[in-house]
Image (tube, rainbow, N blue to C red):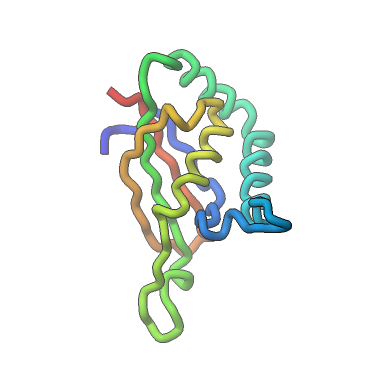
Length: 139
């Protein structure tokens, strides 16, 4: 992976796409999990305002010229990776990508249609589950 120009540390773990939407009264609505994730992103935007403003300014300078490559590193608590019988759980990282892209899009103020998927990676951690996102101008 090339060097990231912007790193967003410890974003909240998004729900999978399967747990983001549900049907109610014949309409698709966001689940409680999805609404909580969006609220957490809004709080990051509020509490990290100066850093987010710098990031927005950086990408605004390149808007319309180039795409943004996005690499996502998922960190799951070690006890969430395995069933009680020791078998590895399916973590569905690829099903979480859209929520990550939407959250990053909200944070940096760039529509996610300008994102070029890079890689994604999964690692165990002793901390609460979270996501690190590495952004760079796509050359």
